[in-house]
Amino acid sequence: MNNLQTVQSIYEDFGQGNIPAIIDRLADDIAWELPGTGHGIPWLEPGVGKQHVGSFFQAIGALEFVKFAPVNLLEGGNQVVAIIEVELIVKATGNSIKDYELHVWSFAPDGKVASFQHVLDTAGHLAAYRGQAVPA
Image 1 (cartoon, rainbow, N blue to C red):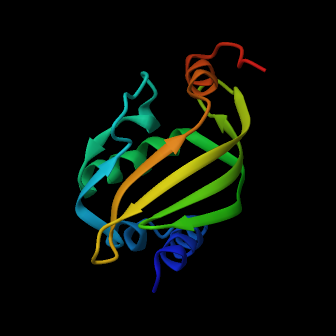
Image 2: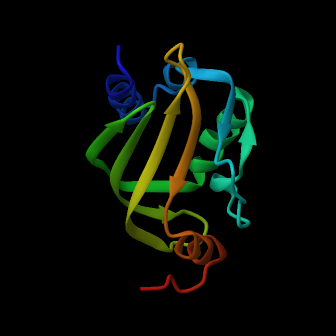
């Protein structure tokens, strides 16, 4: 399975709620949201390792996904970048976010995901999390 197919499979597993299959495709020491800062948003906290990724999947339980649609996958070198159309609601506040995100997947030589990072509207996520008006 090449890197592009691995990312496609990860999104399929996400849609089916098969988190263990996703975690199985990750390096033990995966760098999640690194380099970076969490900005105070629980589902965007940086960390290392599969246990941290498990915490990410627990944190996104605070979100209701209205739409999560991979629009395009771009591959080059050891990376795959996914353009994702998202619409979600922060359950605690009722605030919604509608945006495009980039997911950057980097792979180790053994085919495992070595790092992952979201590129998204952190101000919008933070506002929705805090129950504030989401910037337009």
